[in-house]
Image (cartoon, rainbow, N blue to C red; front, side, top):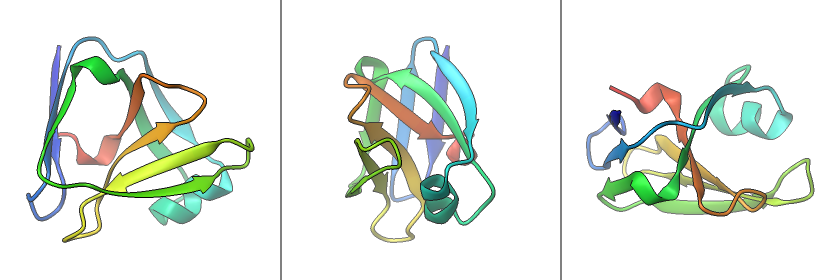
Length: 100
C-alpha cells in the first residue's frame, strides 16, 4: 500500500510504502491542544517506509504518559505532518488529515 500527503501550502510532501500498523483517534489534552480539535486522527506506520520531501520543524514535549512526543510540522504554513513517540522508536504517526 502507498500513502501520500502534504501540508497545506505544499512545501512538505511525504509518502509511505507498506502496511499501516494502526489507525486511531487520540483524545488526550495534548493532542487536542496541538491540533485545535477534539481528537488527533493518527495513522501509525513503520519509519522504514516513510519519506519526506521538504523541511520539517520539530517540537518536543513530555506528554501525559510522561514520555516525549515530537510533533513535526511545516515551518511555512504550520500544518502538522507527523508525530514521533519516545515510547515507539522506529514508528511514525502520520496526521490523517494530511493524507491525499
